[in-house]
Amino acid sequence: MSIVRHRVPAGVCLLALASTIAGPRPAPAVDAPDHVRIRVVAGPSGASNVGITLAGEAAQAGTGTLISGVAVGLDLGGFRGGRVLAQPLLGSGARIATAEDWGGAWIQAGNPIGVVYGFTAGATLTAPPLGPGDIMEFIAFFPNGTVTFDPPAVTFDQGSVTTTVATSTGSRALVVADDGDAGDAIAAGGIAFGRTEHSLASAEGLAGTIMAICNECSGTWRSPSTTFDWPWSEPADDFLPPFRMFAGPAGDWRWTWEGTQTSLLDSEAVYGAYVPVGDDWSMFRSGSGE
Image (cartoon, rainbow, N blue to C red; front, side, top):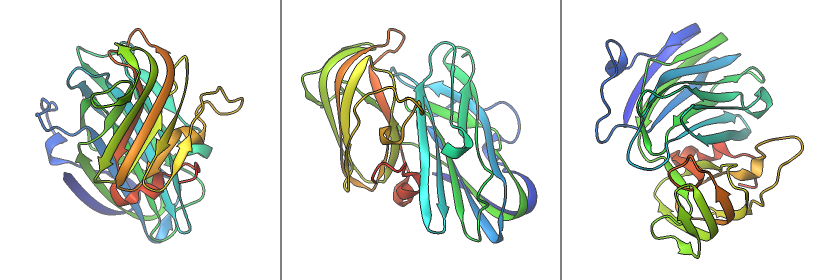
C-alpha cells in the first residue's frame, strides 16, 4: 500500500504523489493498484464545504468485465454512514452519481483508447460542516482493472484538514456462477439464469453494492453481523435504494443471486462489486441495517 499525508490550512490542496507528478503515467505493473482512497480529517476548527476531485486512467486487467465504482464514507461525531455505487464500463464509458443528500459522489469514464479509460471522480459535503476530528473518505475503485491518477485536489472554505492518499488492491466483482460458487446457475458471457451462492472469508472489512443489471433477480448478502435480502424492484423515488449497498467487518461473507440477466456487451454476468475498507467499514453503511 502507498500512502501520502498532508496538512494544510483553508484553501485548495493538490496532493502530490511522486509517481504521478510529471511525465506520462507509467504502464500498470502486475501488482498495480485497483483503488485509490482519500481520507480527509478536519482540524481543530473543523472544515466547511469540503470537496474531493480525482482524475486518472483505469485499464482493463485480465478477462473480466471492468467496473468503475465510488464510495464515500463519513464519520461525523455520532453519525457514521455513506454510499457506494458501481457500474460496468462498456465501450462508451459510463457515469454514475448521487445527489448531495446521498453523499454527493460521482465518477465518469469516457470512451476508451484500447483498454484504457480516462476518468474523473469526486465527492462533496456542503452540509453539515466537518467538526473537529470529523472524517470524510472517498474511494474510486476498479474491479478487474488497474488505476493510475494525477494528484487529487481537496477544497474547503474554512478551517483546516489533514489528508491521506492511499492505493491498494483487492476490489472485486461479484459474478454469477463464479469459480467455486454453489447453486445451479448457468452463465455464458453476460447472459445468466438460475441461482448462485458466493462465499468469502475476508480478512478485511468490505463496502460494496449490488448493481442494477438483471432482467429479474433477487438475493441476499450476509456479513459477519447482518443478513439482508434484496428483492429486485424499480422504486418510485430512488434509482439505487440503500438496501442494495452493503458494508461489514472482516469475517465470513456470503452473497446469493437468483434470476435472469441478459447483458450482451459484458464478458461475464456481474451483479455486484466491493472494495476492502478495513476497520472503517461502518463509515460506508447505507442505513440497510448494518
